[in-house]
Length: 435
Ligand code: DLL
Image 1: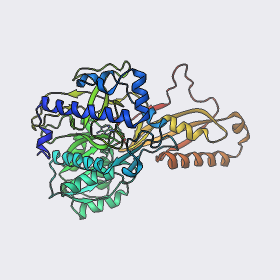
Image 2: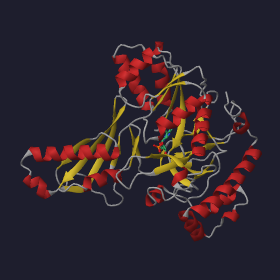
Image 3: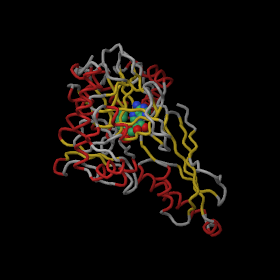
Image 4: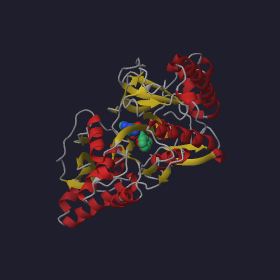
C-alpha cells in the first residue's frame, strides 16, 4: 500500500526535476536568512545561483553536528520564533544538545511522511497502534504519534519504559502494531515470556523498529519471539525525526528515502568525495522543504549505502541499506544518543577525578548496559581511607550522568594510573554488544 502515490512513485526524471526546483529554493532561502550559511557559502566561494543541476550541490560545504552546537540553541533557524510551533532536542549537558524547531507546515510534512511510513508497513485505520517510543523532547514519540492519527489508527501513546504495564496493555487492548527500539521489542518478548505470557497469541502482527542499529539476525529473533513482521524505520532529529526513510512490507530490504523532501548523498567520510549509488559511505542529507530548520549537506555520520534498484512495491524512491555503523564515536544506549565527550564533561565537573576514563558498553539480556570506569586522583586515593567517600562520589557521577545525559550507568572508580594510556587518539569505548 502506498499513502501518496503521486509523490512516492514519480518517474525518476520528474522526481529529480522537483528536487532541483526545491533545492534551488532552499539554498536561496538559507543564504538570505541564516548568517551561518551566508558565511559558509561565501567562504567556499559558492552562490545560490550556482545550483544549475543536482550535482552542483557537491560544490557546497557540509554542515556538521558541531555547527549546530556552535549555534545553540536557535542560531540556525530560518524563521522567527513566532513561526515555530514545536521544539525537540537531543539529550546533553547544557549547550551541547541539538535543538530542532518546526513550523506548522513542517509538522504537517512530518505527519504526512510518518503516515507514508506506517502505510508502507501495512497499517490502516483498523489498526490499534502501541507507540512505545519516548514522548517528550525525543522525536520518536510525538513524531510517530501524529502520523498514526493521520491514517486513522487507534493510537496508544504509551511512551517508553514501564515494561509490566506495556505487557498488560499488549494483552488487554490488543494492539495490532507496535513501535519501539528493536532491543526493547526483544526485552518485551523476554519479560513477557518470564511472566508466562504466550507472546505469539497476542494480536500484534507488525512492528516498526528503529532509532538504533540492528541486524537481520535481530529481525528474525523479534519476528520469531513476537510472531510479527518487523520493519525498519530510520530518521534523525536534525533532518526531521523518524520518517526520513522506511522499509516497505513488499521489499523488506532497505528503507525508501522520501526523496521529494530529502536529498541524500553517500560520501567517503575521510575525503568528502561523493560515491556512486551502491557504494558504502556516510549519508549526507539536505532538507528540501523544511521551513524552520533547513539543513544543507548535513553529515549524518551514519554509514550505509544507497540502493537504486527498483522495488517491487512500485515506489521509485531510492532505498538506503541498514545503517552498519557510524563515522564518529556516538553511542546509542537504550535509544539515547551519547558521545564519550559528554560523559567526560560530567566527570570533569567533579573535583578529585582524572580525565582518564573508559566506557564499557554491553548487553544484559536484551538491554544495553553502560559501565563508566574513572580514575581518581592520587591525592583523593591516598586520603580516601573511607570507602564511603568514594561511594558517595560514584553515586554523584551516576546521578549526574542520568540527569544530564538521560542514561543509567554503573560507575566504578578505579586506582590512579590503572586505565590504559594511549599514544595516539584515545579509545575510550569498549563496545561488547553483538547485534
Ligand atoms: O532516533 C529518530 C527516530 C525515532 C528514528 C524513532 C526511528 C524511530 P535521533 O535521536 O536524533 O533520532 O538519533 C538519530 O539514530 O543518526 C542513527 O545513528 C540512529 N538511527 C535512527 N534510526 C535508525 C535505524 C531518532 N533504523 C540516530 N537503524 C541516527 C540504525 C538508526 N540506526
